[in-house]
Length: 251
Ligand SMILES: [Mg+2]
Image (cartoon, rainbow, N blue to C red):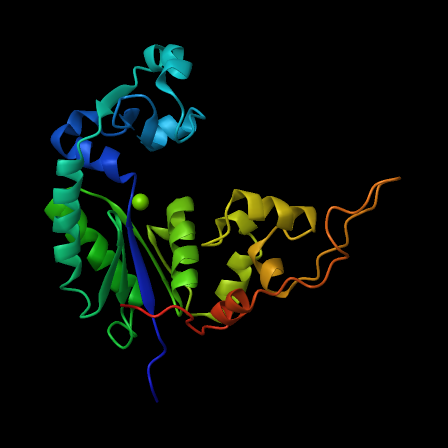
């Protein structure tokens, strides 16, 4: 029987911050942020900075008080360093799969089909250990039968520490359970505005986006509905992706 497709998404945690911390280990567990080209805005945040409620893209002048109060260390961005660290991570990943697609500076898809069927979680932990030991950059790993589900698994691996940074969604029950908890805006490809529109139609979670029947929008007096009467939202790609059918080819 052919092995079930298993795609892994390896994503570096707080990548720019992690790169800076490699050379400043004293800043581990301390609030650290990296700034945009002109030092104007926050473009990367350590978990400690995220916990302070500081959002991506926040202009520095708006949080000057928080920076002083919480002793946040700021770095100008150093893209030469980040590109070099990224190349190191990707080179290490090549030893774990013959098929790898570098998706962004800190993310890569690996085709693990037939490679680690016996114990995918242990294989994921091996990848994590190798990357952090050799580069100092921590990563989280999500696995699933499609790229979208690998992304979803990665979201879970990052969000819930008890996963120890690796989640495999080969199991359909596990997948359905997670999909019932994940907000629709966390689905790969659904941006803020589309998420808002879906929310308006009662589609708030991943599972409902695949299988739900959104409730019609309540019509207010003397107004036309914002959208036509609701038809079930079942984007074909989402449904097929949930069923384990890949719709995007791995390079
Ligand atoms: Mg990342």
